[in-house]
Image 1 (cartoon, chains in turn yellow, orange):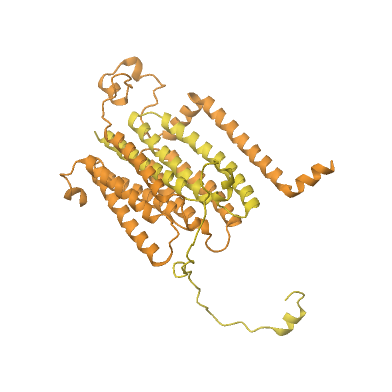
Image 2 (cartoon, each protein chain N blue to C red):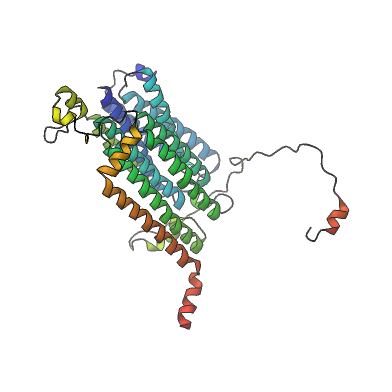
Length: 147
Length: 268
């Protein structure tokens, strides 16, 4: 009974992770975030496989997860090469930069009227100056080749 | 607390409500290019709906045996799920990568609770140690200063959230219908059945991999990997080699720029 409950809870966590990755890969436009979402889906699969493995008392699920890890590493290597190439060509990490590859009957993606970035959201911490300001050695500054 | 307060609601209804509010919360939290006060309100509301959805999932889930096990499982899975949601909802891709690292820690915890010690550690080492660092490296190379416009809008956020909700609903429905009895067509001889009706030749056979919770788990996993699944290991090795050579080839070709390719070809 407990084993079944553990299986169901593990499968639920895996399903939630998979669905979140699905939403991410469908909705986001940054290529890197899309790949992160794909990795999230792989994580969901891994959790489900391990839950089944625990339920059946068999190592087959573990072996499959090791294969998933391998494929994820290969995928990341190849995909990042393609992302870098795409960035070198367009200067953007935007999936919509490649929308000339879309089907002929689909409408064009147009970004219209984005409001300016709210500066109050991005507030970075500033280090307070500490200690004594060192005295500038003017002779040394004059003798340096590059100031 | 909610689980105590809601004992009378049928689990199917609870799951449907949880899935719906998860979809609505995700739609509100995804970047939609609003900016300013409206965006912050939408994110708060989305987070609230997401918390409601999580509470629904927790209430609909089965109770594990002991309080300690339940608490640990709940903690690690909440870490995994919440940071996965933050991964796809955060505007800055660097923050998304860092949330993804936290989600990986949660997933590793879930794997540990499920009795996969080697895989939990391997997830952290391989993903957080290697793959994620590679992602961050590319991000630092390719990220423009400031927030790019394509990070502030989504591709069909409503339809994507609905697609995720449908997926999650179907999956959790079929998960809820699981029963402890295997279907009559293809009964797997599980460990419990083997213990209940011990057949001498089966129990003593060394090939029955058995319990993942044994102490020499890593050794037995290695034995399984290089025994029954040796061909898969070979295939994985070939795959790694092909990926390595392929990515080097693509990078090397991209090194001489596409603008220079055409005149050089013309010169020949």
